Image 1 (cartoon, rainbow, N blue to C red):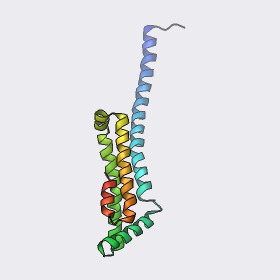
Image 2 (image 1 turned 135 degrees about the horizontal axis):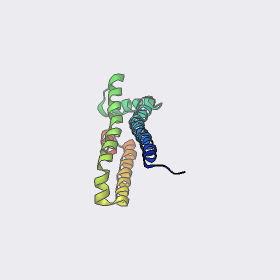
Image 3 (image 1 turned 180 degrees about the vertical axis):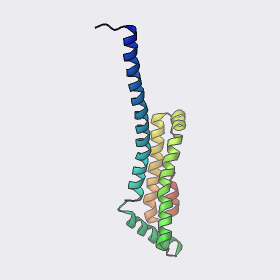
Image 4 (image 1 turned 120 degrees about the vertical axis):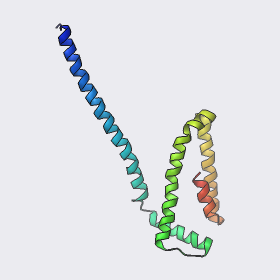
Amino acid sequence: MTYTFQEYSAIHKTGCDAFQQMDENLVHHQAILSVGGGFMFGYQVLITNPAQGAFIQFLNISYTKTHGVQQNQETLELIWGLVMSTFFWGATLGSLLIQVIADSLGRKNGIVAAFVVQIAGLAIAIASYFVSIFYFCLYIETL
């Protein structure tokens, strides 16, 4: 089957319009899904965490042992919220610095450096069980 130039142009134009419309819809849907994915992750970590009560109880015991003062539930939940938000601030900072680290250290050495920092944080967390350095441990783990 042969087409004239006008017929071919009409078919091609219709096809391009359909693809352009599909591309615009695809971009909108991808944007919505990418924004919504972060909210779902944050909701699962912060709101529906079943161990949150145990962590707040641990925080209360540690705070009382360190400062000799027992806090009310609202203050403990505020402190716990601040501690949990450091996870997201660290993730944001890491995502912003990943290019700089990869360029300066290389990918493999950057991953090795991240493991070294993680192992140091783990060692401090283990030591905090035996030594009363709870706040120092929290600070180092958020790096």
